[in-house]
Image: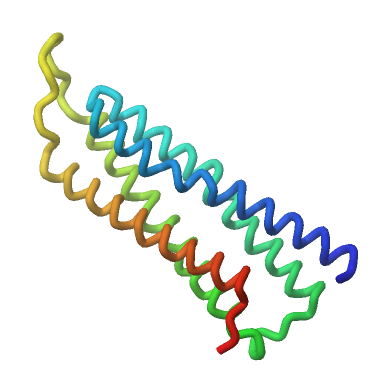
Length: 162
C-alpha cells in the first residue's frame, strides 16, 4: 500500500470512529430525557448538536477519505461487491440522516420550545401526540441508521465475497 493510501486509510478509520461512535450514545440521551422530562429540551438540543456538528460533517468527510482510498488503492467497484454494497448503504444512511433524522429532531425541538409554559411547581403532563409521533419516528430512524452502520462496518471489515 502506498504512503498516500495509508494516510487515506488512517483518516478513513479515524473519521469513522469520530463520526459514528457518538451515534451510539444518542439512545442513552433519549432514554434519560424520557426519565427527566424537564431536561427533554436539553437532550434534544444536545442530540441535534452532536448530529449536525459531528456526525453529519464527519460522515461527509468519510466520503472524501473513501474516495481517496479507492483512488489510491485502485479498487475496481465492479469487482469488489462488498465495497459497492457499503457505498450504497452509506449513501442511503447519510441522505436519511440529513433529510429525515436531523429534520425530525429539529421538529421535536420546535414543539418543545413552542409549548405553553407550565405553572411553577406543576409536574409535566404527558407529551402531545405530535411529539410522541415524532419521538417514535426519531427512534425508528435511529434504529435504521444503526443497522445501516453495522452493515457498512461489516462490509468494510469482513469484505465478504459475493
